[in-house]
Each structure stands twice: as structure tokens, then as C-alpha cells.
Image 1: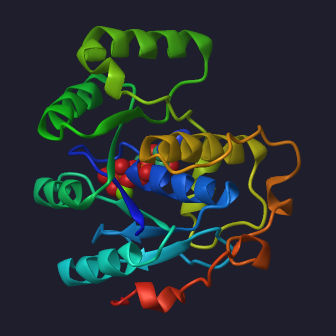
Image 2: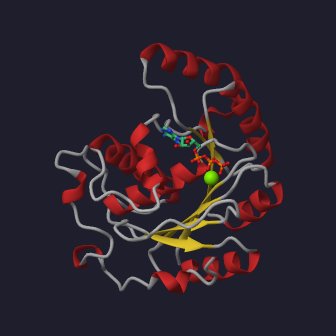
Image 3: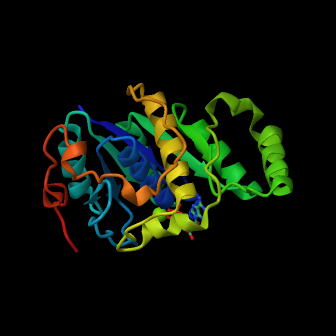
Length: 239
Ligand SMILES: Nc1ncnc2c1ncn2[C@@H]1O[C@H](COP(=O)(O)OP(=O)(O)OP(=O)(O)O)[C@@H](O)[C@H]1O
Ligand SMILES: [Mg+2]
């Protein structure tokens, strides 16, 4: 049975969609097959061509049920469901069906206040610092804010995902043929951490050395231990 990861949270713009795609990209890089599931009715599905993962459109409740059932039936696969901001009912629903729940938050007091509420509401969920500063001074200030305000939840805070301008390449309708190495490294590290939490066996990834584009894609024979389902099987509704 597939594992389902849901990326949710009450606040908009925390990085749910970016993180969903980074996670799926990372899964592809560590040879895990995954599906990135869109639930946000304000967004359009991205083109699956050239990605290391499938894209599923689940913007209606009926479609979500079908997609989750389909993904669950795919042995060894991982489903990553991208929630949407300000949708408490949807967040509760996704929480109830997920094996693992991630709550991204950025380096702001408003995000921290919201993630505290979400951590209380969803006791199995993990918070994940997103778009985290890389400049040493800003990084120290951000980490200090987390230590001050989130110390009670320190065992539920994952390693930050750094701010990477290249992350937006994954959200382009069509993905570029080659992605920068720092992005690949961040995606791989994130995927590895999530696999560890899900207790899915996977060798710890080495840092990228060669160009990311040189590696095989999810559809390549080298990656396909079992046949890939067709993307349309996972897209009961197309808009
Ligand atoms: N790791 C990152 N590095 C740099 N920019 C990022 C990162 N993650 C997200 N962003 C940027 O932050 C903005 C919001 O990200 P995103 O759309 O993923 O958030 P969201 O939580 O899905 O928003 P919404 O609640 O509207 O669905 C986007 O402009 C995105 O490019
Ligand atoms: Mg989003």
C-alpha cells in the first residue's frame, strides 16, 4: 500500500505547493515513485512531462477520493497531497487520511503563531521551516525565533528547507530539462528525511556531484520496478 504525505496548514503562502513538488522531485532522485496531488481549486495542474513524478488533479472532493484510492492501491508508491491555505475542513480531512503530515512555516512571527495552532490541532503533524534564510545573520535570527517560540515542539520540527530561487522552476507549467544542483540536493535531503519518518528503507543520499539532468527519470526503465500507471488514471477530472 502507498504512503500518503499531506502538506497542509492554515496560512497561505508558506510553501506547501513548492514543498510538495520538491518532495516528489526528491523521491524521484532517490528512486521512489510518487504522485503529486493538487487539491487547490485556485491552481491549475502542471504538465507531467519531464518530471520524475506523476501529477494528479484532485480539485473536487470526488476526485480526491478517487485519486487517494488509486494511489493507495499502488504498492511502493508515495502520494504527496498539496493542501491549500485557509481551508480548515480540507486540512482536517487530509490529516485524517495521511500517514505523515507536514506543516510548512516561514521565518515570520505570523507564520510561527499559525503553525503553533496547527501543531496543537494536528498532534501527529511535523512543522517544517520553509524558505529558510541562508545568510548567516538572518539564519541565526530565524533559528532564535524558533527556539524562543517553538521550544515546546522541538521534537516535531524538521530540518529547514532553504530559500532557493530555483525552487520556482518546479512550479513552471513545463519543467526545464536541467535543474540546478543546489535544488536537487535540497529535494533529495527532504525526500530522505521524509522516507526516514515513514520508515521506508532508503540508502542515505550522497550530495550531488554530476548534473542533475544526467540522471534517469521516473519513467526510464532503470527506475521502473513495476509499471507506471498512466497519468490519466490518476486524473479523474480534467479542467
Ligand atoms: N524554498 C523556497 N525558496 C524560495 N522561494 C520559495 C520556497 N518555497 C516557496 N517559495 C516561494 O514562496 C511563494 C509561496 O510558495 P507556495 O506557492 O509554494 O506556497 P503555498 O503554501 O502553496 O501557497 P498557497 O497557500 O497560496 O497555496 C512562491 O512565490 C514560491 O516561489
Ligand atoms: Mg499552494
